[in-house]
Amino acid sequence: MNKLKILLAILVVANIIFASILVADVQMFESPDILVEVELIEINSNEILLGTNIKISNPNSFDLTVSDLEILSETKAGEKIGNIIIDGGKIASNSEKSFSSVDKLSFKSIDIYEIENTVSAKVGINVLGFITKTIPLEISAIVSFDNLVNDLDSPKVNINFDFEKVTEKGLNFSVSLDVYNPNDFDLNINSLSLDFSSEKNIDVGNMEITGGVVKSKEYKEFLSNGTIDFNALDAEVLYANISGIGGLKIAGVNKNISISANANFNIPDIKSFIFEDENIDISLPVQFRFTYSGLMSTVGLKIYNPSDIPLVAENLVCSISRLDGEKTYVLGSENMELCNISPHKTICIKTQILIPYMKYLFSGSKKLLPEWLILNIEGDFSIAGTRQSFPLSISAYVDPHFFRNSELIDAEVK
Image 1: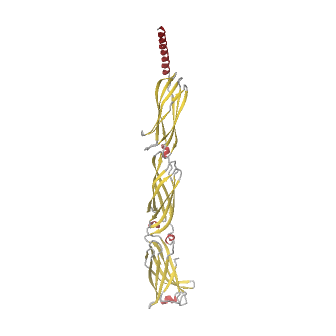
Image 2: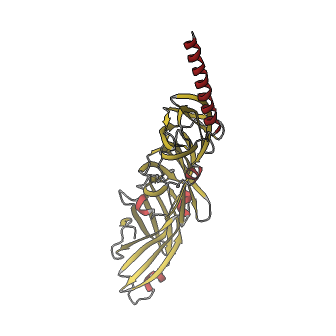
Image 3: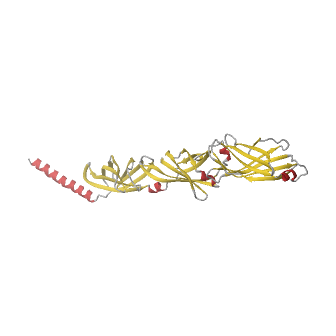
């Protein structure tokens, strides 16, 4: 019985001593130093790879135990976008230990790209294998990549045109847009607007071009066809403007970026489009008859329009001259009426020129009869409804020694 009392007394004394040591250790406890390093490893269209490294230094003479180590990632608006648990462990006295993780994060909706990582843990004092006290720790680190998002490069756009043919609606063309995406994120383009204007800032046409997805660091070609109004042909220079909005998908969220480009080009020669497949067919039927007042000539202009658009022959002047050697003498001239020529149709107009006998026989030469009579018609061809025109000049030679009642002279456009 005495031995039992003695043993109990020893245990009480030992417990008091051990408790005193623990109290002294706790009182001398220094909070561990915690360093949180957050690194943006990668950001792509779908997610962010965020690396977190936590260094905990134990300045105490006894071991520390780290448990419930958790990283909570939230946006500035309080949206929870990530939560990861890291295994803890023991940190020996006067040493440090690192705890690392890589987290995949994606946003649902956010205007400012900023992430606040809150690291929390429980640190326990470990003395002689016993955890005597647990202290909660919490520290935050903010990583922002708003500058990265705001400093996005605008897509590069090259515009190429190919004019095809003139129709009754205007000048058909095809357009090719080469769009390069210089960013690290996919670019989604719904549509692009193509607007045309003249050097006088007059709108002459517009169209929508269907978009698509342009991969990061890649080119994509967008093709379309359209028609420029006829009044565009009156311009000296046409200006094309491309505009639209592209969506860059960044970590699961679309961010809009403007797309624009400009180009200018000269109006092509419309003759190459109007008479691309076949030449215009023109002939000059002429009829001479003698009258009391002089030689009456009836000159016709027969024109076939091979194009798909209505043409206008205007400012037409018909003249008849006599040719003696290298000299010509105008015997008479008359204006001809304007004529509209429908696509793939033939039209014939005529005029009459009276040549007095004295003028016919005695103009500029000692010979009564000229070597040749020259029929000439000059004027302009134009596209109906525009000022775009090109000159028309037709000449034909008639032998004055062999008059017939009527004669058909073929002529070509010069």
